[in-house]
Structure formats: C-alpha cells, structure tokens
Image (cartoon, rainbow, N blue to C red; front, side, top):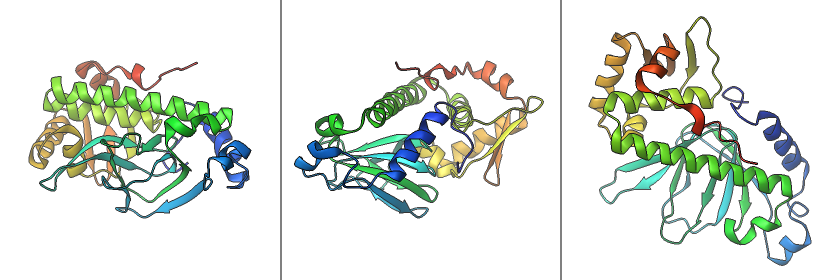
Length: 248
C-alpha cells in the first residue's frame, strides 16, 4: 500500500480490492442493480491537487480510496475552506448523500479510487454483502473521526489540536515505534493543517516549533517524526479508541 499498512482491517481491504479488480462493471451489482440503471463500478485516478468533487457536483456515489490522501471539506463564500476530514487508503467517502451538504473532495497526493455509482441510501442493498459491510464500517469510522475533530475545534487548545491530529495520522497509517521514536511521510502542508484545525498558518507554524523545541515531535521536509510518541500521547490525553472502532 502507498502509505504503509492499514491500521485496521488490512486483510479485509486486500480481499475487497481483489474482488473489485476481478469484477466487471456490468456484473458487479447483479441484475437488480442493472434494473436500477447503474452505470457500474469505475476505477479512477487523480493527480495531486486535482478536484475529485466540488460543492456543486451533483454526482451521487460512494468512493473507496485505494491509495493516496484526500482532503474532504466545505468551501466558504470568501474562497477559504474548512477541512472536515483527511481520508487515506481504505477509507470511504460518500458524495451527494444529501442535497444540501455536498462536500468538496480534493486529492492531496496522487489518488486511485473505486467509485460506486448511485446514492448510498438508495443503492446500498444492491452491493455484494462483503462490499456493503466494508462500506458501512468505513462510514461509521469516518463519523467517529469527524466527531473527534469537532471536539478538537471546540474544546482543545492549539497545541492539543495539532498534536492530536498528528498522532491520529500516525495511528491511521500504522507507523511503528522504534525505541520510542516513530516517523512517517506526511504530504500535508501547514495550510492543510490550519484548514483542518481552525488555525492560521502562522499559528500552526508557531505550535509546530513549540512541539519540536519541547522534544515531542517535528514536522519538516514532509516527514512527521515523534521523539517519544507515548509521552505526547500521555501529555495531550490522546485515546485511539475511536480509530480502532470495532463494528460487528
């Protein structure tokens, strides 16, 4: 996988990918789906910085990220944005789940994904069972992440917000510790972090410097490196239970 092993469900994800790769667009959903006029499963590739969907996109679909990093959020009238979630390999994004709350979705890195056509609430029953269960679990995990992000924005201070997000990403990419240290490549910019955490770029830069000088973590040259991840976990009270969501 592009950014290490999935922290949860890696084997199941490989099984799903094998199945999707081997199926044809016509046969994937079966006769019931064809009666609903599905156009079939699509595999799509996007370049870094490319828009996957914008707030005016009328598509209804479920996206399964095969590789790469995706930023999902809302575009504001002044041209700024708020990042609601970063989606990585194995994550699920729904497009057009409601008429009034469409997200903008952008490829942070080169991205490969499978696109299941149709509105999730109308067509989920037509998916093969193991695909359906994977999508539902992916949606539940995403809800758990966005709920935790809301807590960060509303209750955590700037240092806690930045540290919490970097810790979350390290767990999601499955980074391993060696002698207390842990590191992983991270394609996000300080602008991305600010958009996700409700902070200015200047504030993000100041917090990262403070965390580095305190001996917790550095983020330089596209690499996040924890000098003692467990100490940072204890300091900010990070609990990864919401990432290890076990459904069914």
